[in-house]
Amino acid sequence: MTLDVDVSDPPSLRGPRSRGEYDAVDAGEDESGDDYRRETIQTALHDGAWGDAFAEWADSTYLSVEEFETVGRLGLFGEFDFYWDPAGDEVGYRAPSIPEADREVFPDRGADGVDEELDDLGRAISEMLESDYLRRDEEDDESDFFAEEEERESEAEARDAGDDPAA
Image (tube, rainbow, N blue to C red):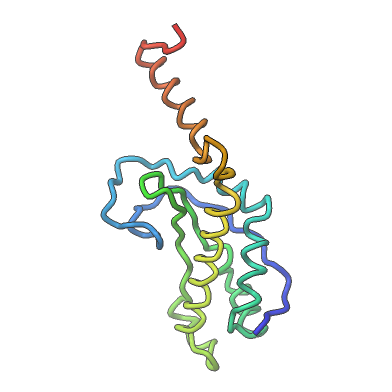
């Protein structure tokens, strides 16, 4: 079933959360850092990842136009959250759930069915970010999108510690 609707705006990513709150990420990972690379992901979402993944999801979702519009009125598309997990080399996501007070608004499919569709959207966007927006060509020696940024951060840390690698 194809959902013929306008693509919603990408979410504004919020501050760090516990990594265990994200889907597609192991909850037992080290939580010592809070570098979720939100700025880079936010840019990728606005550069097309959100729209591309949204269009793919709309081609296969079971949401009706009415359910989609209700999800939009509830502001749930803006509640998605994404972050880069360097340990797992993947994008984690947190899909919103229908608030308890609004669950009865979805009598046909039920709120659980709508929650599943929102989770599918989060997974589609996460996969789109990983495969098409946050990685370089595999033939490129620098296959890690963030390798240059991590190198700059390491050099900055070394300078701060007084061990200038350029010296």
